[in-house]
Length: 235
Ligand code: ADP
Ligand code: MG
Image 1 (cartoon, protein in one colour):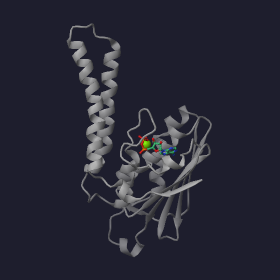
Image 2 (cartoon, helix red, strand yellow):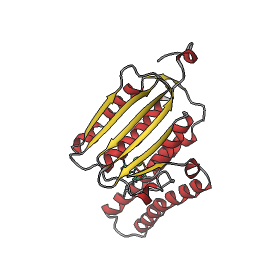
Image 3 (tube, protein in one colour):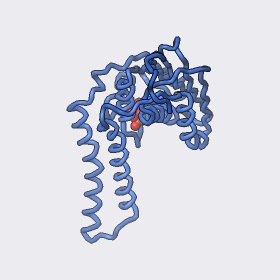
Image 4 (cartoon, helix red, strand yellow):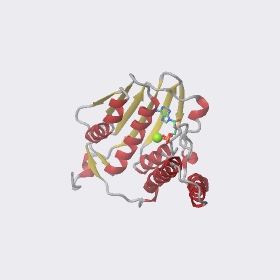
């Protein structure tokens, strides 16, 4: 079993990211350009070319939509939220993917969870990223458990545990590097973007994994004391 508290330097959005974006977008663009040139040269248009062009355009779209989160203003709209409910909504959102792959997703939440002051859409995106990763790593018949616990009312802990392929030690060390992916259609941006959102909420995350057994991701968010919340609107 490997433990890692992902260090923040590695994930800082820097020149490395800019170079990565340029590179990752140039590749699909080159493919699109090449096939367009081929079609303009008078050769008969093959269905296959159109297919590749459309796939490469989707790839650019995927990369840009993940990166857009980073471009959003730092000060986002934060209100106290029932995180258990928010996670249940996320799981429902992803349930077709789970059902199609025969993966059971179990959600359990502590009673009387304190509200988390957060940007709802950002935290939803984080949960989608982690649960999707768990779904993508888990084979048919596997299980994903999402648990939400309160830690003495001072923090909320969310665990996403899967019975998937796991992550080897050297791969674990690379998690969160921009564009690091082991998936054919991955962007390698999910963890980096998630980390940014978690940190902007004062939280942390850590990953524990055993190859061929599964992976556990633990997120922790500090909770403001109730007396600090007085006067804030509850939605
Ligand atoms: P992407 O999902 O697009 O590949 P992420 O940043 O979300 O990008 O994840 C990066 C990599 O981390 C994945 O490609 C995968 O190798 C690994 N990973 C993340 N979560 C898990 C998990 N639950 N089980 C196994 N591997 C994982
Ligand atoms: Mg992902």
